[in-house]
Length: 274
Ligand SMILES: Nc1ncnc2c1ncn2[C@@H]1O[C@H](COP(=O)(O)OP(=O)(O)O)[C@@H](O)[C@H]1O
Ligand SMILES: [Mg+2]
Image 1 (cartoon, rainbow, N blue to C red):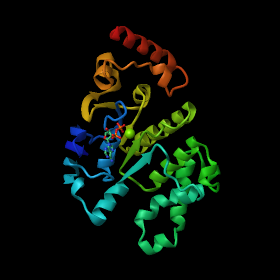
Image 2: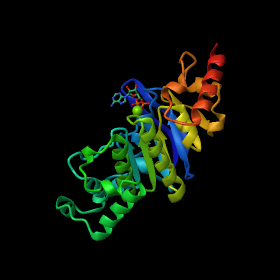
Image 3: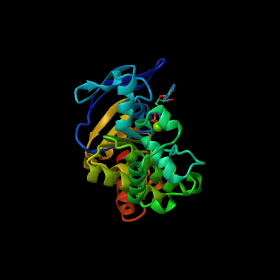
Image 4: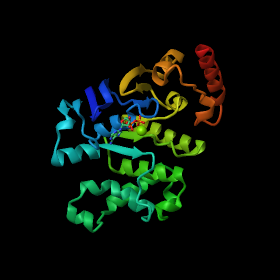
């Protein structure tokens, strides 16, 4: 996927400002930036939930921003989206929620009557097994913890057989342990299935721990693009602003040995800011 000059304006506000990004490798890319930087809008344009004002998104030479009808739906199926609030159907059981990932492959008639073949049911159970939640298959989705619900959402995404995964702050509502499990699942899918994952994240340390590449956004602009190792205090300031007090140990989603590194890093930041 190659993104060229991607721009979104809401009236006079430029939410995403002329972004160029080459995401053709099967990397795990973390997008970080302060609230309002344009991260969600950026992802939503990629899978056509929000129309772009300007720019191109080229996939196999095709500008997917121009696709309509069946081609547009096929593209939306190809890039599965994972949301902060899981977007499950609360009253349906887990395995039915997962099979909803197949719905957009069916005719309206089949969809209406909820007809799934054995192969599709097996696929759903396999995805659940892979995410470690097969034993929850028959429970109502709203009886699961947040972390389990997000794993159901990932299983649903897998069942969709996507070519890439987009995740908008998938761990922002989760406790640290669940957050770790969810990020590890996304990473495992990226590595084992070779699927590109683009993931909006609200904490730096998560991007550092799980991503091959970090993209920093600020006020709609791309202000950093590189491996986590290059995310030094200068880069962090470019993303979050010099005035921004960053204490990673407070916002950290990691729970073990990372703490130490973060503490050191926060200290470096404070020294740099002083
Ligand atoms: N539907 C909308 N209408 C008007 N402004 C919007 C809309 N969606 C987002 N914005 C604005 O666009 C900017 C970027 O928002 P968003 O993409 O949600 O940022 P982030 O996900 O980084 O927090 C913000 O200033 C936000 O208020
Ligand atoms: Mg957002």
